[in-house]
Amino acid sequence: MSVFRFRKFVRSAGWGMLTRPDVVFNRLLNNYEMTRRAVRMLSQPSKIEVEITNRCNLACVHCLRSKRGFKAQLGDLSPEDFDAILRQFPCTLTLTMAGFGEGLMHPHFLEMVRVARSRLPNANILSYTNGLLVGDIVSAEDLVRSGLGQLHFSLDAARPETYAIVRGNPYFPRILENIRAVIEARQRLGSPRPFVGVNFTMMNENFHEAAEYVRLGVDLGVDYIARPALILTHWGYSDGARRIPRQELVEALTQARQAAVETSAPMPLGDYMTDPAEYFAHYEERRSQAYRRCIFLWNYIQIDPFGNLKLCCLHPVAATHVWGNVLDTPFRRLWNSEALQAARQAVREGRVPLAPCAQTCVRPDPELAD
Ligand SMILES: C[S@@+](CC[C@H](N)C(=O)[O-])C[C@H]1O[C@@H](n2cnc3c(N)ncnc32)[C@H](O)[C@@H]1O
Ligand code: SF4
Ligand code: SF4
Image (cartoon, rainbow, N blue to C red; front, side, top):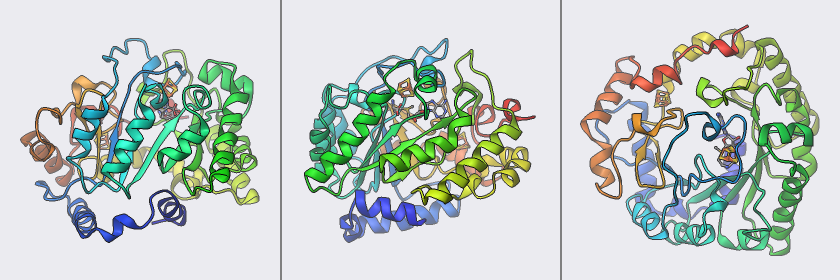
């Protein structure tokens, strides 16, 4: 565990979960089964992501929701169904309340956090937000009091004009104000939570601002600055968006790295941030082997607002990768269904597990090539 992850865990979740022998045992077993590429699972995933709503107040240029042809049924998960889902995952260490929607649009967002906190008192409960509804639908104080462990604000820009292009609205100053408001409310209320982060998904429209984004995060005084994220899948772009030329991408990441080092930013510098040039020099090879590092079939599951079990947000179209419904069928049965066991077996044998993986995780990405 990196120093950042450790700090996040301690601040946002506490140690309580580690005093639960069932949770510790499940995590160790899950790790063992994932490492061994077990086909039939005895353990449960320790990370779950519940998309409490897939409605959103924005239409960002890079988001799946903005893609022409996006036709998912939209809706909210009820607090009762949320509780019924969480009851099936008593060993959860990390619960993410987000997906392809804006959590704060959910009319019962705070109640949902409280449901999660009472069902999983010591888990790390986190959410991602576009941040614009803080102070409007939900106050900064209420967010702090809710028990949320981490709140990550998606900036996707460092300048108002870029924000307007990517996020389709002129309210960049408001998101900065809202980040400060949550940090101040937390200090005022003397609460260690939520741990506040920012993130930035790189695309042609904004990648040149990656270093500025790092400095902005430092100025805001957030606890965590996520690495500038790469959009790895072709489906992620809205139809009109353009791709980043490889060399320019490497330069932007290198500058972001330098900015982080110079400012001692709370940003992890592993993986592709360690040496972006070296990383992208072997990109095609890494990409063609990406499925070998798959964790989703073992450790990390996603559930949509209708209770459908999905396995990986790299699979864009729900209809192609729903593995059953956890509100109809107990998760433990779905987890060892024939189809899932076959997918695990495929990774074990060095084959791409599922048809959509070949379009996403594995597919060489010509858009990122020179
Ligand atoms: C899908 S959003 C959902 C939560 C919330 N609405 C928000 O914007 O933070 C979560 C994060 O995914 C990022 N994202 C959106 N589309 C993406 C894509 N095609 N590839 C990678 N990340 C994407 C967003 O920029 C955001 O940081
Ligand atoms: S990135 Fe978030 S805010 Fe933007 S459209 Fe997607 S879900 Fe909504
Ligand atoms: S795309 Fe497929 S192989 Fe890749 S992480 Fe997702 S489920 Fe695993």
